[in-house]
Image 1 (cartoon, one colour):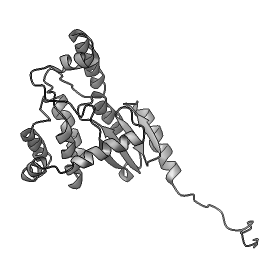
Image 2 (tube, rainbow, N blue to C red):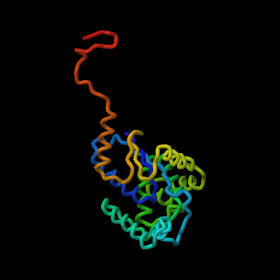
Image 3 (cartoon, rainbow, N blue to C red):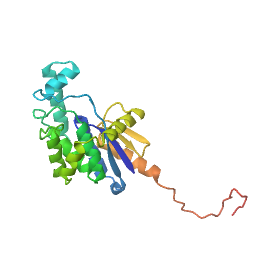
Image 4 (cartoon, one colour):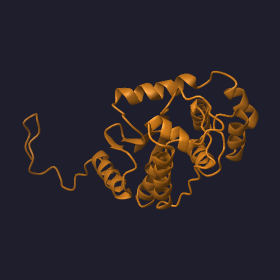
Length: 231
């Protein structure tokens, strides 16, 4: 079973959704038969670095609300994250464009470390206050999960994987993705949002059962074939 997940590394619901999905997957008997691929989705591809501006202020400006309301919205997300064991620290979060972080995810995929890269990028932004738009920071994150830092730096200083990020975004638009996280199971079923783990469990079981071949428990006796032979 293949599961594609569109998300952004600075999407609070995406990290929460990841944890809820992982809980469901852990209880899935066929979890070893599941392949997961993270797809790029930039919530704001035009975002410019805004050092010195708090995430509370950024959210308030984006939503057209007061600073107090912006902080209240982030506090709500922090409490929701705690329910799945995550510690969000919006006071330390750094506003940056996520293009290079997504390029790192594509590079990590070629080395079999995309899952590790995704988790580390989420943690770096939401709990460590790292700047995901800074190349040195991304190289450090890559090294922490076992990637070659020199190779990562060379990649980031080039245009490699930019088209891959854009293609993921284009594919999302073609299948009607309006928000993230967005989970696609075997290119057939979709789950939008950080749904309860029970929802993911139900979909995992449903897709697995539907994809299994029929098992004939009887013999060929009592049947007629298309060539007119009856047994």
